Amino acid sequence: MRASGRLFGPALLLLSLMAQGAEPPLPPDGPIGSKSLPSAWNRHWVWVNDFVFPHMTDGMAYLIDGDSGEYLGTLSTGASFVRVLLPASGDLMYSPETYFSRGTRGTRTDVVTLYDRKNLKAAGEIIIPPKRASNLPMMSDEALTDDDRFLLIYNFNPAQSVSVVDTRKKAFVGEIETAGCALIYPTGARSFFSLCGDGAALAIDLDDSGAVAKRTRTDPLFEAGSDPVSEKGVRVKDTWYFASFNGDVYPIVKTASGLSRGTKWALTTAAERKQGWRPGGMQHLAVHEGRHELYSIMHQGPLSTHKDPGSVVWVYDLNSNIRVRTIPLKSLSSSILLSKDDQPLLFSIFIDSSTLDIYDPLKGTHLRSVEHVGTTPALLVNEP
Image (cartoon, rainbow, N blue to C red):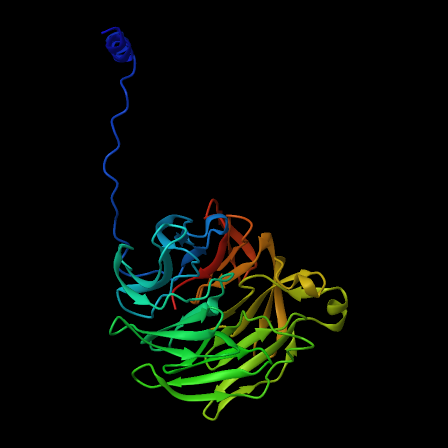
C-alpha cells in the first residue's frame, strides 16, 4: 500500500496546485495527419534528396517551397537513396529504393515506390532486380525516357547493366547489359547512352516493349586519359554538356545518325586555369533551357579537388560560350539547380551542411535560406 501511495503522490500534488490556481496541464496532441498539396505543382518547389550518409538505410526527400522557404512534405526512401523522379504529367512520381528484411541486413529487396504527387503517400511499388548501384548519388543513376514511358535504373554488382521499368504497365520488363559503360543519359522517347571507360559512349535504342532495338558504341568522345570528364552532365534538347576536371566543356549531340561530339570550349581563360580555377561538386552544372545558359560551381584547387564545393557560380551564354556573369554564394555549394520558368530561382546546397540557399540567378542576389534540410543533402530535383 505504501508503494501505491508513492505512485499517487505526484497526481495528488498536481490536483492541489490546480486547486490553488496553477496552470492546468496542456491538452494531449491530436492525431498526426496529412494534407494534400495544391493541385497545380509549382516550378519554384524543389526536392532536396538526402542519402543520409551516417545511416544510409534511412534515405529522405524533402519538398521545399522556394518562394516562401516552407516545408511542404517529406518522404522516407530506404537505403542507398538517390533521388525522386518527376514525370512531365500524371499523378505519380517514382523513387527507386532498397530495403533489407532485418533493417541493415537480411534479404534485400529493390523496388520502385510510386508516390501520389498530391498527398505524397505511397501508392504502390514495383519489384526490380536487387542490384541497383549503391554509390555516391548521381543524377544519371536513374532517368525517365523523354515520354516518361520507361524508367531506367543503373545497376552495378559489379557487372554493369540497366533495369527497365514500364511505367504504364507498372512492371519490370527487362535488363540491358552495358559492360564497361555506366550511368544513363536519355536522348529521346526510346533512346539513351552510357559513358564508357575509354571515353566512348554506348548508345541504346529501345523498342516499344523496352527491349534493345539497336546498340551502337561510338569512338572515344572524351580524352579519358589526359582530361577525364565528370559524369555530372546536363542537357539542353539534343545536347548533353559535360565538364572535364580541368574545366573544358564537351557537348555530346544526338543526331539522326547517332551521337557526335560538338566543339570543345573552356569554362576558364588561360590565366584563370593557371590560378587553379575549375568546376567541382556533386551536381555542379545546371542549365536554363529558355535562356540558353549554363551555370557551373567554381573553386580554386589542384586536379584532385574536382569534387570539392565552390563559393561562386559562373554563368555562360551557350550561344557564344562566353561567361556573362558571376554569382557569389552565401555559403559553399556542391549542388545547384535552376527552376525552369521565365523568372527562375537558383537553388544551392552543400552536402556537409543542411542549409538550402535560394538566389535570383538573373540579378545574382541571395533571396533566402532554409535551414535544417536533412543530414547530407546531395541532389536537387524540380518539375520537368
